[in-house]
Length: 109
Ligand code: 2BA
Image (cartoon, helix red, strand yellow):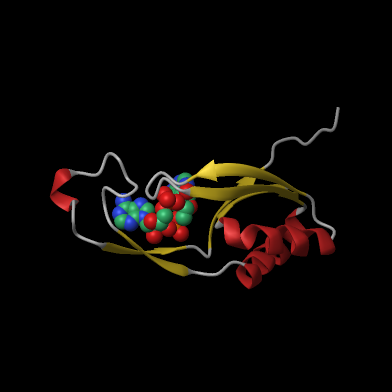
């Protein structure tokens, strides 16, 4: 069994959870905050049999989009290094950051 941890943009989370549900996959949705942008994102925990892993990754690919964000350091990042202040920075966010962990045990107690 695998645990898939997927960090996705809030805008993509509804479509992703819907698609996972339609595929009969269970997920847990956590509200999270990115350390760089300091903005809300969504982290999904998805426990799956090994055989379902590729299906999960494909659903994530199909539902999560890459977006470009132009940020002005200092707004809203409070702790931006002074050297960066005033220089707009373009960052690409997503589609999804995915971690796959082996699950030692799975219980519903
Ligand atoms: P954030 O940390 O808010 O990062 C948002 C986007 O900013 C990142 O998109 C990346 O393109 C850019 N970025 C991050 N750190 C940077 C830096 N030091 N310099 C320049 N640009 C930087 P993604 O890579 O798609 O990541 C989206 C979100 O996934 C991240 O939000 C974070 O919440 C999570 N994430 C990404 N890598 C992670 C990791 N290794 N461990 C844990 N969470 C991670």
